[in-house]
Length: 152
Image 1: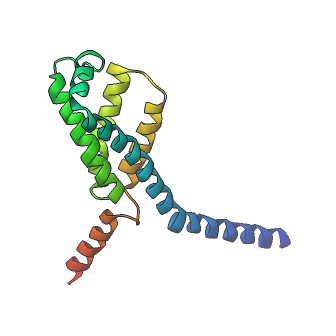
Image 2 (image 1 turned 60 degrees about the vertical axis):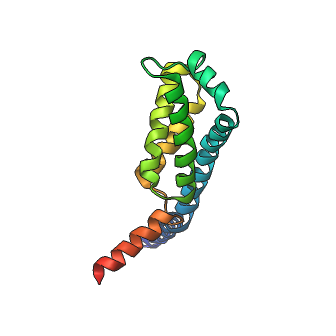
Image 3 (image 1 turned 120 degrees about the vertical axis):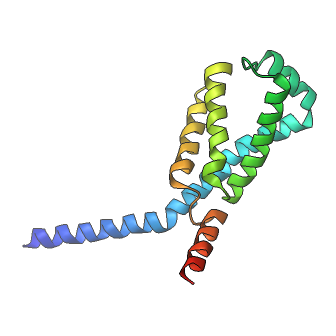
């Protein structure tokens, strides 16, 4: 009987810990992922914006993607890196904003340069795609507003 009480006590402590992680720390983790991955792509876009002519040259010779115009690819990469990283920071349209980055990461890894960091990026982006931005986001606020409006 004493063993059963101890076991139930451990289960209760475990459940409280899981509940705490789920209710508080998961949102901080998702926010941290958003900031981390957002910074990676935002910095890349700012470098491209600072000297766009050089980016076109790089996309022509170093980052050449078959069947696509280097100018178009440089523009699209810059555009998506800038816009989607800001959206991910804010937690607005997060799941949708991760999709261009997932595509870019796969293209970079397979056609441009192989690097282990790309797998880390992919895992972080997939985490945001699957779990969303968390409660510390515009997505969460808008979802709750829409739910409240539907109830009225």
